[in-house]
Length: 163
Image (cartoon, rainbow, N blue to C red; front, side):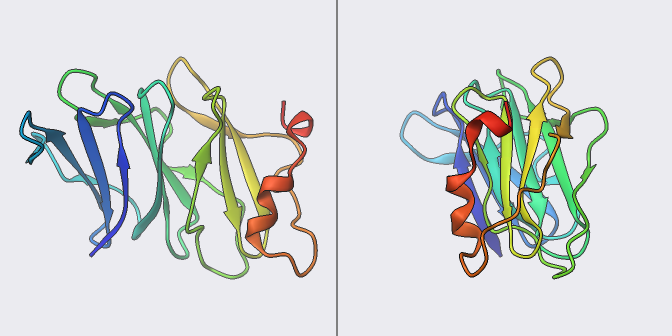
C-alpha cells in the first residue's frame, strides 16, 4: 500500500513510500513512464509515512507511521536515483506517547531543517548536516503546539527559534 510520493527536484526520479517497510525509487523515462531503479525497493523501519527530499536533491527522509519513532535518511545517487542510508540512520525521534508518527514532514527552502508536526509532542525540528545528510534535533525541539490547535499550528513556529 503506497503512503506518500515525492519527486526529485530534477524531475528525473520519483520516490514512493509503502506499508511494506520500503521506499520505491523510479526513474522518469522520456515518455513519462516510470522504471524501477536498480536495488529498489530500499528498506526502511516500520511503515514509512511522510516523505521529503531536500531542495538540492541530495537527501531523502521518511519517518515511521507507528511506534518505532525513527527517521530513515538516505543519500540520493544523482546519476541513477538509488538510495544509500546516511551515517547514523535511522535516527531516533522524541518518544511519542500517542505511538503514532507524523503524517507529514517538510524541509525548509534552505535545506537546513527537517520539520515534523507530531500529534502529542509538538513539532520536531532537526538540523540537516549538508555534508552527509545526518540529522540532529535543534535545541528546544519538540516545540509545543498551542492547546486545541493540532499539528497544523506548526507553521506558526518562530523561525528565529530554530536558526
